[in-house]
Length: 317
Image 1 (cartoon, one colour):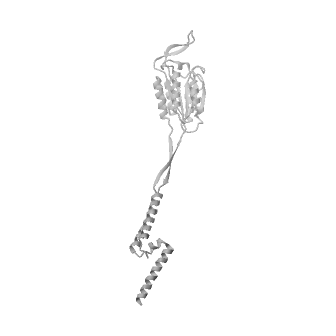
Image 2: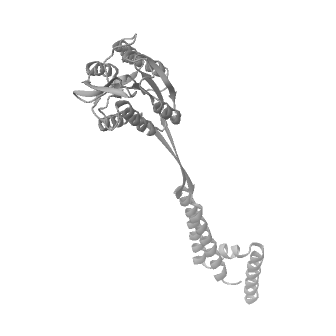
Image 3: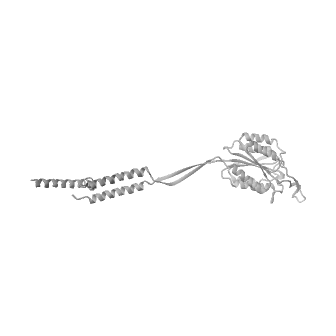
């Protein structure tokens, strides 16, 4: 009798296991495995899989896939005022005269521009705008190339040159407004006093850099034409009103420079270029791609593999 009951109980257990296997497949073998070790191992594998998911997502691996750099800066406004009086034809800036050397150095200065707005004012006994403020550098270059002594009434009207340039700069946007004034003489023409014009420029926040061009002592200066129609030169004292130019620069927060030769003039323009660089503010935006999916996928594959091994090794009913 007891043997029959034991046999019946074992038969019921076998039938139940078979039904569980038919209903739930191998997962039933994991959760219903007769081995306690198998159950515990399955629980550990499941917990490890969950940890992989959480850790991989929280500590996401990142890789840079793109970088965007934007720059925000003040556009510099610069007017170059160039003396075209007859004395600019003096031959003390070998291998050429003052005006041709000045034009060459000015064009080198313009060639280094990338975003500045540049204007050109020519002056002698009067002052005229040749090019308003613009970023069209080829136009500015051509205007400088076309400058010639004798285009304007002879003389040196420094005050008018400052006033004309200031009129171009006063409404220009941005904080950097600069006038670079190049001359080789003494103010002797014009209706506006240089210091009065400089005071007005200072009120508009315009900084003036003065450049006096000319050697020291005597220089061959054109005084007329010879029988062949060419220029006739005589040695005359080099006279530059350095006190006036220094005061103008000091009033407006600029500086005065003396260029005694072509090399000095080039260095002066390069120095001004470095001094008047507007601050640049850059913003970097970096795009990343998350790589946590790769370790997560590997972890899940490992989990499924372990579950399959446990199911395969589980004792058959």
